[in-house]
Length: 64
Image 1 (tube, rainbow, N blue to C red):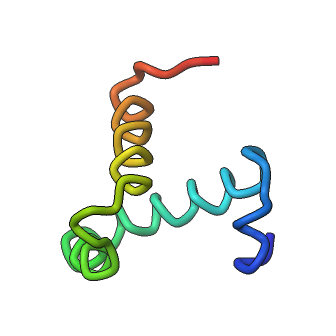
Image 2 (tube, rainbow, N blue to C red; image 1 turned 30 degrees about the vertical axis):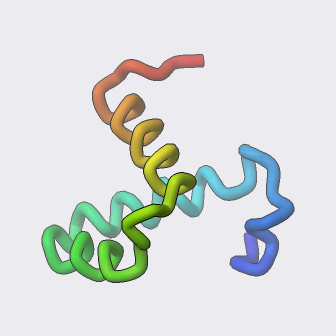
């Protein structure tokens, strides 16, 4: 998947790339988290929504 295709991608296309990116972010630890935090605006509702979904997945609360 190309980065430029994200705005038109369906749910199945970005999921593998997001998983790989989140796993790499976990490997990078705090440095990776700080790099991401620099990019996120305080009032970014879409990011907040995504973070809530990621938290649900991480806690095992989201299933098909």
